[in-house]
Length: 165
Image (tube, rainbow, N blue to C red; front, side, top):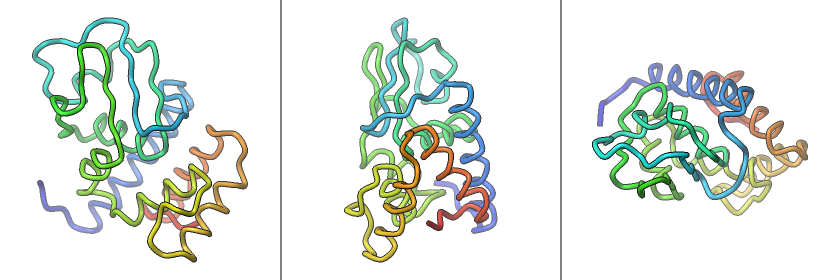
């Protein structure tokens, strides 16, 4: 894993959040649950080794939660998300452990739990009760999944790469 300064990580978090908004606006990502589920119109190329290599391929469906959106946008912008651990012939699926480990070089586990608490509107996802409740309340302000995801990303951008509900 490449060592980065905190300033570099903050810049990356802001860039990733901006890309999530762009992808949501373009309807490339559809809000859902379950981190990442991508179904491609054609079988994936045999030699593909990195998630970024398949992100431009036509999809029948690309559903993401907030953490999944962060993962895909990080892969789009910065690469280094191995495909071999998360693929089948025509699908890419990622769960909680994978999203956390693939984002660990940029986002802290606590930040990811707060983002998840806000998106899922459930305070069970973060260690600090006061913060996770605040995150859940933040998410509850937005009934529409897309609006909620965009609001979370706008919060990350406004706070220099940190999610502060």
